[in-house]
Image (cartoon, rainbow, N blue to C red):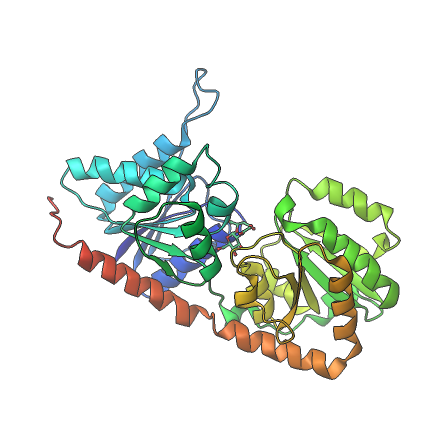
Length: 382
Ligand code: GMT
């Protein structure tokens, strides 16, 4: 198949998932055309079946807000016509689904019918999309998609609760390449971070309010008083300098390291003992799945889709949003029982394997086949 994939090219989960999906599909022989404003961060090495089309948005003195959506729709039209793209898979509804609708209408005038699949990732629904500034356009473009998917049952339900949707939403869970993430730790790296064999706690996010990184710091402060430990903070975003300030004020600050944005998460996970994800909401929590694939149990909240991935007492521990006391107690309890900790690590991997790339990517392929079959009666004039 010739497939167009539209996503955010950044470190966010939706862009990561879309890029990994494209790479996996290319590996299976499909031609993948990425349409984004920058090369996706996880794209990596050259692949004969992967094509990257950059959306450039020319500026003009009149534009206080350069019209990205118009540039994106125009690029979609150009790429589809010139590469015989058969279907367009857009990740994150805003503004990708509405730009795709526009492209589809333009192509229809040329006699080219292009089915659009929209995958909902989370904040496009729960934070941004349901705001009345965007809601009418998001609702319309979701309903105009040939198929809609959500990355968890929770996100599917949130979408039905917040929007008037007149079609089925298929749940296709996010996936992980378990083989890639299940790596042996590099001993010298671990020794640099934890020279006295301290426990290593990890958090990675885009440092937005929804991630509650301040809770990570407060949890660590409590744990660090009882157990010799180090905290690694990976990622960057709007709350980073506030969090750095918060860390400086704690007694544990010498045991906290900011690593910034990192592409080789598997190497950092390999030396980590526990992953902390105290988010106010996660539709899925891809980063938690990657941790589990690396045999790193997850201390998370029970918000959104997290309980569908992290199983309380089995693959990690879940608590209410903001319950810093419970989260720190959970961590201390886990580290106090080495045997139970080792079992939890194995369970985390076992759970991650249920979401392995080899199980989930065929679900997207089947969806593509179904959508193409359902739309084959539409004329294609060439
Ligand atoms: O929250 C983020 O880190 C970014 C955001 C995105 O759209 O890139 O992530 C969302 O999509 C991920 C991939 O499907 C999910 O794993 C995240 O849970 C989801 N984030 C939220 O729902 C807050």
